[in-house]
Amino acid sequence: MRLIALLLCSLCLQAQVWTCADNWAPQAQPTSSYMGGMTFDGNRYWVVGDHGMIMSSLDGLQWDRKFTPCFGQLSAIAWNGIRYVAVGAKGLVVTSLDGDHWSVWSSGTNLRLRGVIAAESFFYVFGDDGLLMVSWFGGWLPLNSNTANDLYAAGKFDDRLVMVGSGGTIIYSDNNVDWIVPSVSTGNRLHDVVANGSVLIAVGTQGTIVRSTNLGSSWTVIAQGGINPCSYRVATTLDGDFHIMGNNGCHKTSSDGLSWGAGSAGVTGFSASSETSDGFESIASSVDGRFLSYQQGGLWQEYSSGTRKWLIAIHQDNGVAVAVGFDGEILRSQSSGNWQSATSNTNEHLFDVNRLGGTWIAVGYQSTLLTSPDGTLWSPVAIPGALQFSALATGNGRAIAVARSGEIYYSDDAVLWLPANTSAIVDTMQASIFLPSSQYFVAAGGDGGLYYSDDGTDWDISFDSGDLTMEWIQSLTLHNGNIVGLTSLGTLITSVNGEDWSLLGSVPSWQYLHSRAIGSHNGVLYLLGQYIQPSVITKSGPTPIPDSTTLVFSSLNGSNWKPQPAMIHFDLAYDMEWWGNELITVGLQGSIHRFVSLSDEFSNWAITQQVGDYVAMINRCWQ
Image (tube, rainbow, N blue to C red; front, side, top):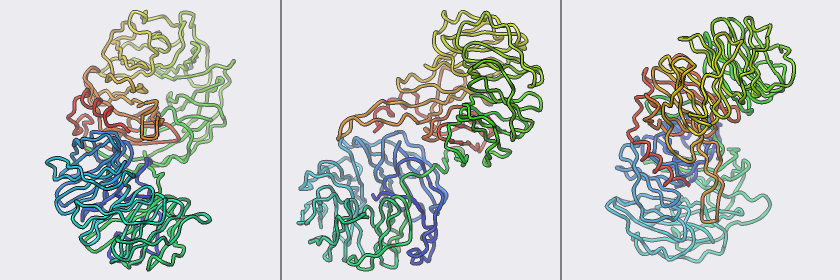
């Protein structure tokens, strides 16, 4: 029920929890998305948040992400010893008996659910407009909360349930049915409530702290307003101290809830507490975390790239991988988790990278063409004009560099580059590839243009693509010995020889899915797609949704697609590459992710939904 924030006190997870008040230690951040509530089931910590995020951890350091059938924002999670229940936007409720397999449970409301608490064998959910319901998971029964204000958090203290919310609202009940509204001398929103014995502390906006010594029957305002007020979340440690945390590293502590001093956690977000059999343990972290792991038939991991610049392309050859991107950014790695910045000697945007023999090649704007013997130190090659190079392909001892405007240069040694005869090319070029079976180079791009060359020097149109598709060809890959092309609108085309083309299929039909890249591994096609939704209607009106969500789909034939464990991350991925049996993606703001397979078959992930049902669920559940 309480927001998790962002510094994890690892010592708090050990027996000597009392030492944590003075020994806060920064830990790896579990996710880049907004984090909502958390709970503890006696064995694992559970966190929920944006995009249907549910994560668990044994120690608060290593986090596994669980697949949920919905991308809606989750606000809170609870466990009653048998079942997990998480709630969120638009009345969303998801439930699980084991924490691994989740399903959507109808709540009968479209109002935002902000919290859930387990009491005895029941679950109580609450949220906007004073909504309060109870369930034994045979249905939901509305309760009269005696308030129309939004309810944000709750706690069970002895046999009393206490809830806090907007406008300084506090309600409590001793029988969980009849709710009493005591008088509180503040109009500020209250976000959290916690107890130490019979003393309750509730905190909220504008540094508000209210205190009760009779389990919530009456309240006294301890603080509100002031200079740089700090009050957002509150917890207690096993030594009995209260801890308040807020924005900008704010941390306050008190032994009695009356006198407050500065704490030492230094977090830059919010805090949360978790109740165990021994009492409360404090966990704190920031709202802006980074994705750590994703467990579902394998392990998604994010690795620090050391840059926030966009990475557009990646290539791996002979145990070395190179990623290139905006502002001349080049990263090199000899192990998938260790990336180091290379010296590119350019500030131009780079859009592709490849290797010819023992020489690495990168291309980009303003006729930028770079070479390197090992991917570490790069040297420019003079190419006339101001071409916008967009793609590279190598094969049969030759490299080609393709420009957006249709020009193509070729080289046999990566040093001397010559212009090819491209008089037949009338389209904007975006992608290129070498087809070993026919020894043909293929280039493709705007308006569905498809061209081929048997040596990279003289180019011919291979297909009047206007008869097939007028869509921009976004990406090319080799699949079972054939070429597969992906358009920006999701049409798939294929060729066995680079000259003759036919429709293969299309990606999942979804108006908000924009195709980004296509790849193949072990006979399985993989799609990187971008979820885009202009806005959603919330209580406060239309709210824009960031267009940086990467989705993953797989298919054996290009027609029947299966969604893979939802989002690999929330930074848009532009390109992918296989490194042995690991899938590496690069993308927005320097993001680098890899999927470590637990088997050789990437298609054996435990997803059973049909794409149509999956998409319908996503559209239904999105916040």
